[in-house]
Length: 96
Image (cartoon, rainbow, N blue to C red; front, side, top):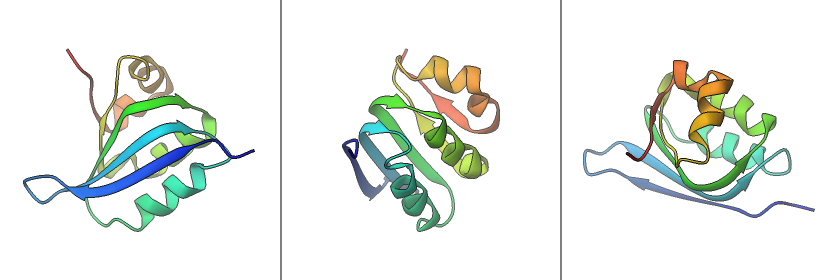
């Protein structure tokens, strides 16, 4: 069974690419995220504030692109990104 994930591409006011994810990212759909990131050149703001779950497949995708990601993460995912080490490789913003 495929886990629901919606990805919406866009642009920030400064022209930077933005990809907004909603739902869960796991081994059933991590390839969709990987394809979207591969298809978006340059720096990408990845908005994960409405993502409820990430598994190791999703983290692997983030590691592959960490050098060009700016991640927006909610309070639920912030500890996962910190413990996994993604926060050491990519810029991660969390709500204050």
